[in-house]
Image 1 (cartoon, rainbow, N blue to C red):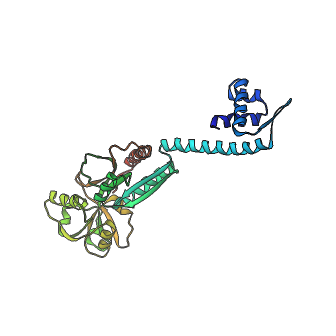
Image 2 (image 1 turned 30 degrees about the vertical axis):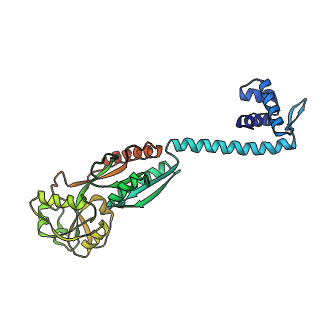
Image 3 (image 1 turned 135 degrees about the vertical axis):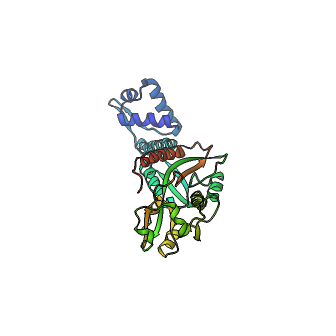
Length: 304
């Protein structure tokens, strides 16, 4: 018994007439009659009583009709799910995250994707930059997010956002009263830097900006993440340059100030990493969402 037999059987059972069923199936009556006879022979049962009024189901036929409709429904579901998977609308997306962007851009981007593709299960993995690269190569994750990623032959990157840098200061600090702060002024104050870990990273970015302004920063503390860094600013350990996304952290005692006449390099990129040879529909759908997110974000007015 194949799916074609079931399709023909359902049509005859529902129409209760060979002629109408044949017209519905867009075939002639003789081959449809033969198909029904073959099905009965294969099963070894009578499915229809032939009467002057047409084709009436036997009790055995009623059982098969119920089962055939269930099978048809399962086939339709399987077909739809397969098509949705082929369009990137169904499946699983493993995402590696790390850093301050989890405070702003990444959740917004993932929400936009989940809203568009609710059938895709998003699974998050917290990983450092080196762990993300290894996991991508081992196919344990589909995409990763990080900053200042050096070019790699087997991985590709797509820009998600370019964020301005701002200054996090304690509300009691003398710079807190300024509407904006020049980078050169920071030479006078202890600074909290983040994150520790694989280089190059955001620490190198900050130190490079300071060098460009002609001074080496007074490093008070170098910590592993933005949350700890801003918490130390709240405790008076120093000031800290932070990506715009960190301003989502509303820690008591900390305020954020824009830079005055910032150099063009006073920004930091957030990128999405993925395998260059990954042709999966889910990745394609996700990258499309990334592109739209970046376009929408570029229309926002600059901070400060």
